[in-house]
Image 1 (cartoon, helix red, strand yellow):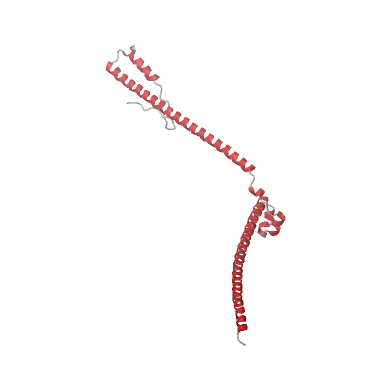
Image 2 (spheres, rainbow, N blue to C red):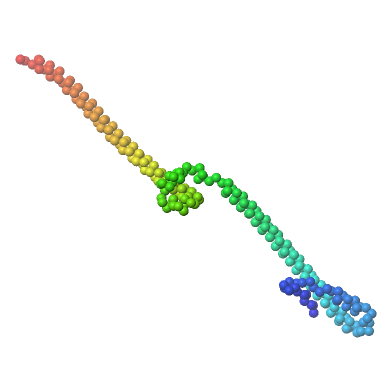
Length: 217
């Protein structure tokens, strides 16, 4: 019966026993030391030793295969770890570049004309210019930007209202101008009609005077 190869404490196949002992027994079996023994018994013992040798050979092959697989897995794990390390280093360099870009970035708000600090203290709501805010440079700038935005929105709304008022006045002015033009046209028409009527009346006056002169006395 084949012998099960030895296993390591972690459950993996370990190094199988050396076949030297079995080989020495086979050599002893074929030597002259057993010439007086029964040939059948020697053959049975030899078959057992050959079975043992085959089992050791299979165990050695199995151990070799297992160790090759373990080595390949370890190499694979090492390659994955190396690749992961390279990815982390690349990500680190990328983040460092992004951080440097952020540090060198000139924000738009730096070029935005703001109310002066004194105007902000005078015009902004009280909660936006408290002592805690004034002592915090970052929060102060955020509040100034928020106040600037609110003021620009308010002024823009007022501008829109004034533009709308202007358009309404222009429409009203155009309507009045059209009405005046219409009245003027009617007056001109009346004047023309009156002039035509006067001409007709004047054309009849000489005829009437002539008739009065030639009438019998």
